[in-house]
Amino acid sequence: QVQLVEAGGGLVQAGGSLRLSCAASGSTFRIGSMGWFRQAPGKQRELVATIYSGGSTNYADSVKGRFTISRDNAKNTVFLQMNSLKPEDTAVYYCSASSYYSRDGRFWGQGTQVTVSS
Image (cartoon, rainbow, N blue to C red):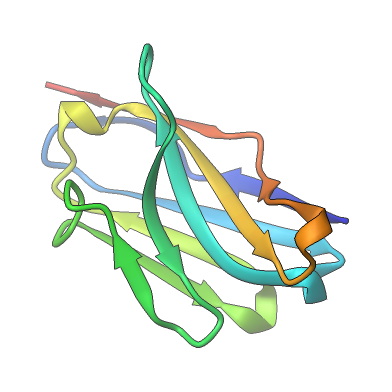
């Protein structure tokens, strides 16, 4: 299977920046796209950004122009650079990866808390 470990969350003031990282280990050959989701208290988990193995990306409208997702395929690591953070970005951020094998389902990390103070 695949294990995903996030790092880089924390507390930041509005307007500040944070960089999240997610390292994959295990059967990484199974990984297709990688991405970041987030879940705020009382809200559903939502997709923030996705990066495909070829490098193409997509973003939620709420983070376009502020967040950048990138990927180091050699190190099986995905990053999320978050700039111009807003209080509404406060959430637990989860790294996730799709599998080339449908029976795997999605792989998930344990989550990292991002808190943006106003």
